[in-house]
Length: 160
Image (cartoon, rainbow, N blue to C red; front, side):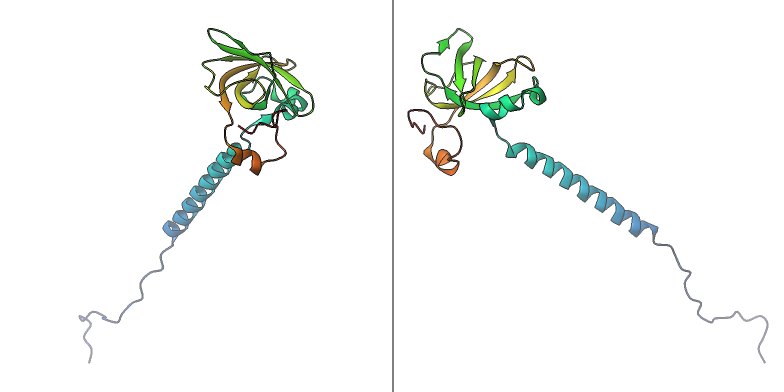
């Protein structure tokens, strides 16, 4: 005969718990992954367009405004004026467009007329052909030009 004093020792199943912690962790990881992908894609998109040719920039003048860009063209012969602050010169594009560049800072040692250059800076206004440059980059390897044959080349065929 069972006694009323004895406790029931039958195993009882554990209570069901909600797994909110696991769902939150997955949600946070998904958000972090999306944020990292967004940052990487923005960085890659900005680095893909290393520079604009003069023709591209002139066709997009209203959109560019005075935004800082890298502008590629060929230094027009007999237009270089070296100043105490840098140099000023005309650059030409592949379709006859011309831009006047006033570059501040020391031009590179290889800088000269009739070679392709990239100038970092901005147009002085949304409609101006005057470009204020802060840095001049000179292309000096033939491998780049061979890889991109449709870009601007110097009229004399120079591939520096």
